[in-house]
Structures are given as C-alpha cells and as structure tokens.
Length: 382
Image (tube, rainbow, N blue to C red; front, side, top):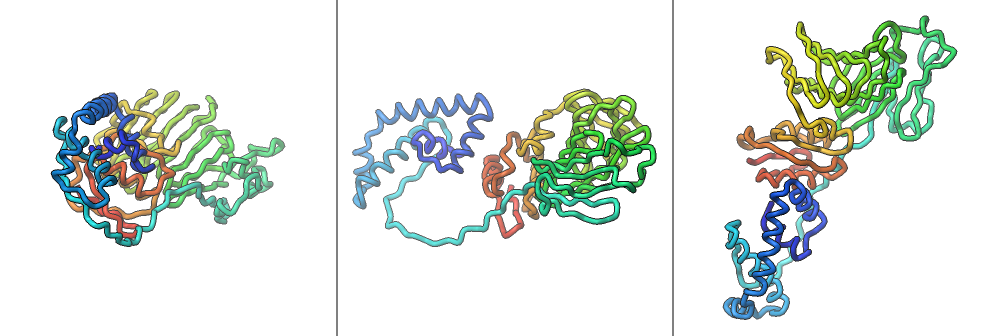
C-alpha cells in the first residue's frame, strides 16, 4: 500500500478508485487495520505539533498562499509521520505555475459477461445472446422428446417429455455448450444437474441420460452441482482424467493450455481416476494431475478461491503471477508479455470480475508489479 493513500484516506480525499484499493488492503488483515490506526493516531498528534507558519515561511509561499499553505500543511504532517514510522521520504518544492496538459486516455478494456454458443446434435450453432428469456431454443430427439429452453434468468434448461419412451431415445444425440473469451454460461442438464461454465470452455453432453451412467466431457473450467442418483453415477471426462460422483458439488479446472488439471470438492465425495491410478477426495480437498506428475496429488485448499469465478470474483490464494494473468487473458481477451523474471511473485486477495481491466491492474500493482497497456497487450514489469 502506498503511504500517500493512507494519508489521503485520513484526509478524506481518496478518489473512488483509490478508495477501492485502500479498502482491499485495509480488510486484508488485522495487521493492516492496526497499522492504519497507528498512522491515524500519530497523524492527529503531529497536527498539534507542526509549526506550519514557520515551515511555510521557509519555503516563501507567495503564489495563492492560503490554498498552497493548506496543501502544504497536509503534506508536512504526512512527512512527519512517514519519517517517524520509517515508511518513506517526502520531497517539498515551491508551488509552480500550473500547466494543463491534454493526454489521450487509454481505451478501457471492459470485463466479460454472459455469452455462449450452443451446438445442437445436427451441427446447428445458436448464439445464445440472440435468444430471449423464456424462449424455446430447439426440440431434440427423433420424436422431439427433449425441449431446450432459456428460463427467466437466462439459464439453458433441458426438459424431457413425460410421455417420451426413454428406452428408445437416440443415444447419439449430443449437444455442446461453449463459451468464448470473456464469456460464461449456466445450464441445467436433463437430469437436473446444474453446470456453471467458465470462460473459454466447453461441455459436451447427451440431451438425455440413458443407460447406467451420466457421462459428460469438459474442456476448460466448470462448476457442477450434480443431481443425486445412486443408480446412475455422473462422470466428467477431461483429458486423461475422469471424475465419478453420485451427487455432489465440485469444480474442475482443465484448460488444454495449462499443465495441471485441478478438481476441487466442496460437498460429498468424488473418485478421481488418472491413467491407472485412483483417489477419493474429501470436501475442502483439491487433486492435481498432469502428464509430468507421477500420480494424483491431493492438498487442502481454500474452496472459495477455487469457485470465486462462479460468484463473479477473482480470488487468489498464494497464486503465482502467470496463473493470475492467464485468468485475465481469458476474461478480458488480452495478450500478456513479460519483461523479466516474475516466478517469485505471489498474490493473495481479490477483486470483482465486473470491473474494467485498469481497476484490476491497480489492485495487482499493490504487489510492486508494474503494467503497461498497449491496446489489448499488457506488458508486465517486475
């Protein structure tokens, strides 16, 4: 946290953006709250001890003296506190004639939103932003046994005709829901399972689940709330990994351009199968698998961080910079370049996904990382 923001907070002169940064820092730990209280207390004490008139005369403030004197007063107190706490050095100069310089403001990079494409079993693609709430999207099956609709909340739902003969249903009738860069979408499958699909992801599934299992295929990231059915396990295949459950809540992070596939369990239990190995997860645990690993690694994690995206947030739990920037690449449609070694940079905390990119970068810069925005390219300086 820049010391000047703390002083501006005390003086109630923070901009809305600066106040958001301050609040994130302030609420991050009890130590930060204690530090702010200490600075605030010392600030009030120093106000009583600073000989403003004497200091002002030394700088010979003549240009708009009252206004400059007031401004100088705030920074004189701030300087005293900074030196007292060993937090920094302030430099003072005589007021100069104000020069107004017009600088073109960089174009804001907006966040993503609800966007998706539904591919039907006949290959027809439907851009879901073109569909209105409560509309019927399509009928699937030889006898149109399944109705696909969009509910009032914009969620895709599959409803099976109660008179349909499921035993004769088309076993090869598959749909695929995919999201572009900066898109997310929610769906309720034919068995009642809820799927929240993250950006740059796709899920392939049958329009209705026949046989003795419920099998779907995932690329990217999704959160599942699986409808309970003890006689028909729900299976998620992603790369070389498969996950088997009866009814539970879990998140799968399986992007093709990332080495590690992560499965995080929030409720119930899941069985992870990877190549010839198998492991059972408990709530609060995450499994990590990759082609470079010898087996299935299991660790305890902050589950809120794993599903923060589902709740409209970025939340980082000791996350390395490159994994953080990959999330931003997918959500904002940007390209990231690095100018130096950033392997030791870690992040804790977070922000909301509905913010413009510039606001998110300001939060990340609290870790002394600098960013330069050139169009849709972000250059990172350690």
